[in-house]
Structures are given as C-alpha cells and as structure tokens.
Image (cartoon, rainbow, N blue to C red):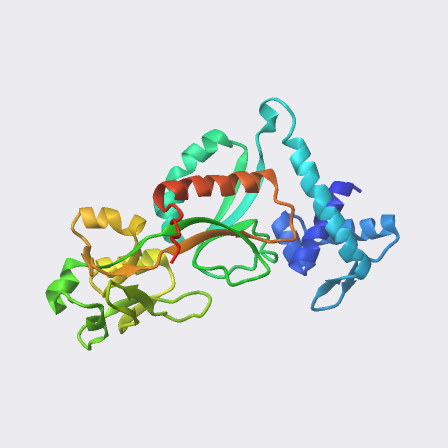
Length: 308
C-alpha cells in the first residue's frame, strides 16, 4: 500500500461523501479507492468511515485523522516546492471556477504570463456563474462577484468592479433615450435580466445622484444566467444593461454601446476569491490567488472607502 495514495484517497472520500465521486476526481477506479481506504483502516486498526448504500460518513476517529491528513498532504506538497533550484516552482493540478466574462476578457488572455512564471501548474477552469460544491467537486477556489454569503468559506477581496448603465444604439433608436432611471420602469422600456445563482432571480439595481437614491428593477423580455450571454443580449438591442467597465469599454469605443445616466452612480461590485476553510492553502493556490489580485489591481482596483 502506498500510504500517500491511501491518505489522498481517504481525504477525497470524506470530502466527496462518496467512493464513486472520489474515484472520478482522482482518476482512479472505485475499486482501487475502496481498497486503498480499506488497507489504510487495516493498517491503523481503526474504522475511519461508515458506509451505507446512499452515503459515506466519517467516524469520530476518521474526522480527527482527516484533519491530520489534510495538513500532512499540504505539508508534503509545500515541502516538494520549497527546495532550492528550478524544482521550487509550484506544480500540480489546480481546479478553479470563474465567471465567464472575467475568464474570456481578463483571466484567459493573461494566462500566458502566468505560465511563464508557473509552467508546471495545470489549471482546470470551470467557467460559470453557478454555485459550485467546492468540497464535493474538489474545487480549490472560485472567483465571484458580489458579497460572499456562504459563511463556511474563506474569502479574499481582490477588486471592485465599477458599474455603468448601457444600451445598444439599435435599442435606443427603437424606444428612445431615457433621461431618468425611473423611465426604465415604463412599459416601452426593457432591461436584460441577469439571474443570480444565489436566488435564481433578477435583482434590482441601486442608483443615486446628488439628490436622489432609488432602486431600478425594470421589465425584461429575456433573462440569462451567464455574463457573456447577458452582454450579447444587450449588444443585440434586447434591453438596457448594467455592466462592469471592463466589459463595456471596448464596445463603447466602437459605438456598439451607449452609456446612460452619466450623472448617476452605482455601488461597485466587490470581487472575491473564495476557498474552503478546512484545507491548508497550498502554494499553487496561493500563487493563483495572488495573480488574480494583481490582475484585478490593473482592471478593477479595490475602491478607497471614505468615511462619512
């Protein structure tokens, strides 16, 4: 029995709650994972897992051992990358999930520079705005816009997205240019709805100027749950958009989007990198988070909060 493989298999079964899911993420057969855990239990002479037809639960002894195993596996990973010489570069497979526009417009175009620094890191990048099961899917970290509601996660704020309101010239030619945000509630106007993963609903936007503060929800003909589709709908003239500046700048310059309500402000949307709290943060995860923070400092730096 390879003790490292056995400990790794045990940790994944605990996290996934299933031998089948653990085997998939480890690229092993279910039989191999089962045998590794059984051999580990035999060596330790302790029952680590309770198995039922539906679920695998960790025992009290298994929970204690799991915490020790996590630290050991992380320490081994760090030890291998802490030696002097070229071999010190972080390496291994990194599983992340990021919003689709952020991936296509900022992260993926910058990856060549990342790989110049860290050529031995292999990234599996999920591109979505969905809520992911970070433990069950073995995700190392996620990048998300908006406040992190899941109190079980650790999160590092890496940026603030400055927002604006935009519409395509074809939309404005058809229904006219609104002079006040309240006009977006009128029957002739439409917005493009964005369905947030946390609620499954299109939420209102808070806007303010020197004299007023209001929330605008509007009516939509189309609502989507993906940022790239949201942008495409606006460019097609299907409604008014609320967009981060990094998504709108190119299309403004081309005349494909027109900014609206320039005297009004929207609160910036914070960007976080979130990760499970019960894992030692490996070097490869740390360098990825630092790299995302560097990119956000260029494209969406954290806003200075002024006192009242």
